[in-house]
Image 1 (cartoon, one colour):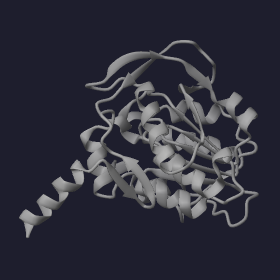
Image 2 (image 1 turned 90 degrees about the vertical axis):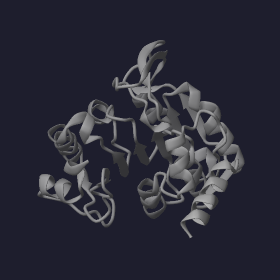
Image 3 (image 1 turned 120 degrees about the vertical axis):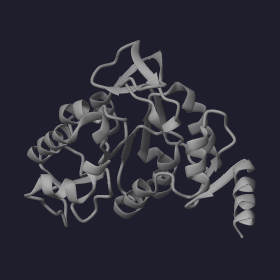
Image 4 (image 1 turned 135 degrees about the horizontal axis):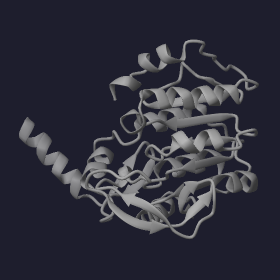
Length: 255
């Protein structure tokens, strides 16, 4: 039985296309590393983020995604809200063609911005491309290689695009970026935090800043490292008065 399971898996790994939760992805592209490809083929890729997105996103939302990777979540968001209501930003220039291909396969065309999510528009800034497609960051890691890439002022994008829903997975850069963003018209945040890169105290402080800006931690929705914060004026919010306890319960400290 194990032999046939391995044979089936090898067959799936050789296929060019994989449909993951209704989203078609081209896994043959050389920019998609073996780890990410395995995650897609096994149906595990960004499953927590996808669950939250499809559960919490409303058709009338406008979505800004920081850290698009292979374009999976932005394609899903575009199917819910329409392409004109979705903008995604990806810092790794090598993934832009991957995202465009996957968007096209799904008949969607969200606005795609190539650049590092930051607070200023700068022509060149250091960026570190990781061995995994999902592991690139402004933070240097073992095995990463340095490139120069432009930065994109996220506050400018927010002012121009006027999103109501913000998704963020930018490999540790969220700690400094989030507190400095104008989130006054954002009703919902889905943020993947990275405790191994930033530490628990920095994450706690970041979320405390967001609660001071009028957001509540949705304890009932948080998934592992993916934290959901909702504006308190939004219906059905759930406020947490014991932030550290909640984060520990969600498994952040163990990651």
